[in-house]
Length: 114
Image 1 (cartoon, rainbow, N blue to C red):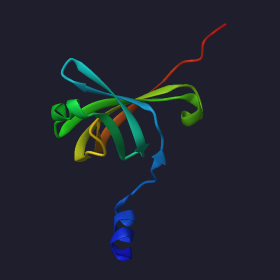
Image 2 (cartoon, rainbow, N blue to C red; image 1 turned 135 degrees about the horizontal axis):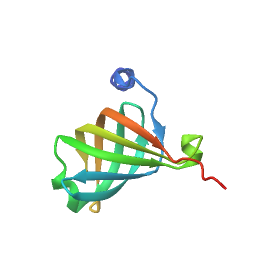
Image 3 (cartoon, one colour; image 1 turned 45 degrees about the vertical axis):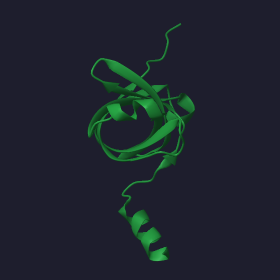
């Protein structure tokens, strides 16, 4: 059992951070509000309403809003394209989504001028 756990950790190529941040999935013209459990530069795990889970396809577009205390600078928005790797149903209300980030761009909020 310990060997299997170690193998799973070895497959993760980047450090994950436990972060609860707003995440919005865009499907067509619809935006679905979600929130993250953890993220890295290569992937994200987030929760969405159980009823919306059927809308998730293999390829998704989403954005994550990182507050200043997490971004270590001004508020920033990360726009991502990704691929769903797996889904979990931790409760009757929520579905967990593990997604690989295929590419992303970062938009920082500019400082307000006084």
